[in-house]
Amino acid sequence: MTEHARADSAAGSRRPAIVVPTNKVTVALPFSKITVQEPNQELAELAVIVAELAALVEAGATEPEATKLCLRAQALAARLR
Image 1 (tube, rainbow, N blue to C red):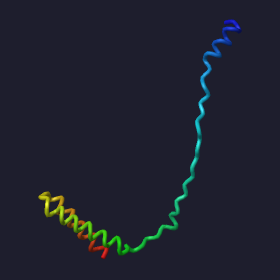
Image 2 (image 1 turned 180 degrees about the vertical axis):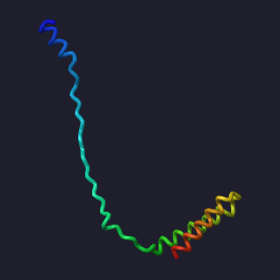
Image 3 (image 1 turned 45 degrees about the vertical axis):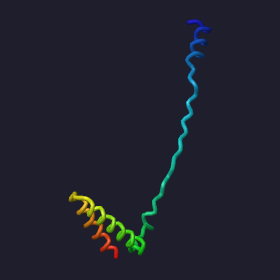
Image 4 (image 1 turned 90 degrees about the horizontal axis):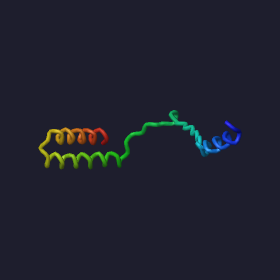
């Protein structure tokens, strides 16, 4: 292969440069600062609303799943009061 042929084949086989960004993110989770709090009044009220909605669904549905849902929602509301 002549020098001219090598230059032509090298020029023809050139690929565009690929730029690959490398980003590194370090995430620190504050596990030592997690605190457990008692449920507040708004959460208890929300649980009561969910229990009431579950009772409405149970009244309109004949599936046993609706009854189980209603019982679970009522138990949660009772625990949060």
